[in-house]
Length: 576
Ligand SMILES: Cc1cc2nc3c(=O)[nH]c(=O)nc-3n(C[C@H](O)[C@H](O)[C@H](O)COP(=O)(O)OP(=O)(O)OC[C@H]3O[C@@H](n4cnc5c(N)ncnc54)[C@H](O)[C@@H]3O)c2cc1C
Image 1 (spheres, protein in one colour):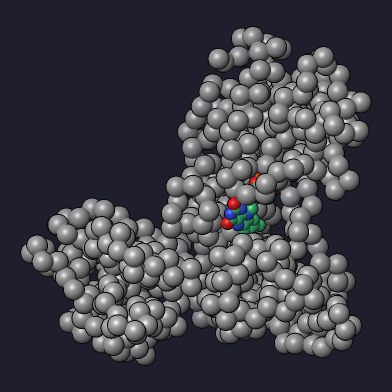
Image 2 (image 1 turned 90 degrees about the horizontal axis):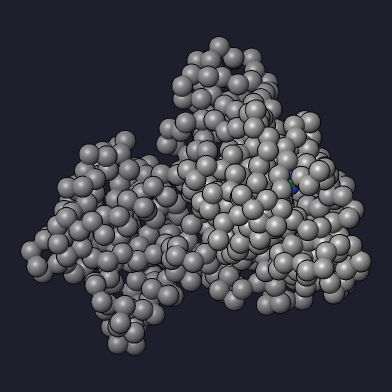
């Protein structure tokens, strides 16, 4: 090892077999020049030496943020050595970012391309990096900086803007933390029975606190805050100002609603978005969205949502957050929307982007453990707490697969519980392969029928749906991702939906029983419900594709249709 790392600083490890021949030195030199103030850089020249170094770093309790390794050519007939090196790096430092270093143009080499595809599919690397060939090579440094940002956000030790101190398995603390995560607010959690927790409480003069305490880095202290108090504290709008009339009101700030907001405000429409929970909707709970166009390495749902939120805000969208809409009426050519706390706003057009939420598991004994071992959705905030513990994921869809993969970074074992006979019917093949490679157990024909524990979940009972046999297994976490229900029960009956609650739009309106409601001579526009001027986009729409990209696409194109309706009602707000 060329440098003795400092005990306090994270380490960047470079395993570089070949190096730049144009005189720019080894990758480690470039990293030292750029990051040397905050990180230690160690440099090895073979996989074996690199692994020995990583073992020694781990034994000394040091953090490793990034491992960059290039690929020595495999000997004829032998396995690719990069597989073994990265596989072991992942075991030693599961949270470290890992990248294969390749030379510019090497993607044209079949063996290199295969290695990249294989290592990503197996979760052994996060991505690849191009070997820097000049100094400074800003493209290389952008890749490294992005890795470091992602790593810093994934580790618990880094100081954060918000600190939550609470009993380790407090369901209310889980709700608060989940809200913070889904809103992209960085926070750290200290259980109140740890030294860090006691120190933080003592500093706030709250040694005896039993309810969750939230400490902000500017010194503010919230004791047992409501969701709205917490949201106010991190600076989002939860009340409307004097202005209550808009061109368009978008209900829901998931990907579909955020896209509608960006396009509406960028095209000059006075736009309000009302969201009952968190920016990003379901996508906000996805740890890594890999199939959204343009983000080749994937992006966390919370990060994508934050970017979209800022984009809409910069264009002038008004947001009303933490407010659930409970009524939609019409009055003098306006649609009037009422929130649960009585706040009202009106607009000439409404875009319903209310999405769906996970169906409940329906096992009564498990209800008491919600937030204390039983979680709906991927619950990114809880994954780390599952370190070394047995975890179960219920569901056979892509979101269940992603959750299982994410949890497998921490848990001692992950088991996917699927009611059906095969994963292939419901999950993408790339995830099935990754699950297999990660050693995640898959139990088909299986359902959860009971569970229990003292204060937190400790076991579950499983039933084989073929044989009827039951048995119990120790379980610290049960993550439920079993299909969805649309958020439409609050809407008036005249906005017609199918038997599952999904909203009819466009041609579906005229092909269904909703046709009897349609009052105009013109046909409903593609995303219009059976009430003219009320549109539905994203997952809540009957026949929608249930993907981020399609939700964003629908949210974007609906604004063109909103313009047409507004032009008919008030030409002054119409745009070409
Ligand atoms: C864990 C997970 C992982 C996923 N991973 C991927 C992936 O990798 N790739 C992919 O393409 N798709 C993925 N999906 C699916 C994707 O997230 C959804 O298709 C997408 O979020 C749908 O967007 P939406 O805006 O239509 O609805 P949602 O995201 O469901 O957002 C709807 C919003 O409306 C709000 N709302 C509902 N009712 C009201 C009301 N009455 N008043 C105010 N607000 C209300 C909700 O709180 C919510 O924020 C994933 C989903 C999950 C859960």
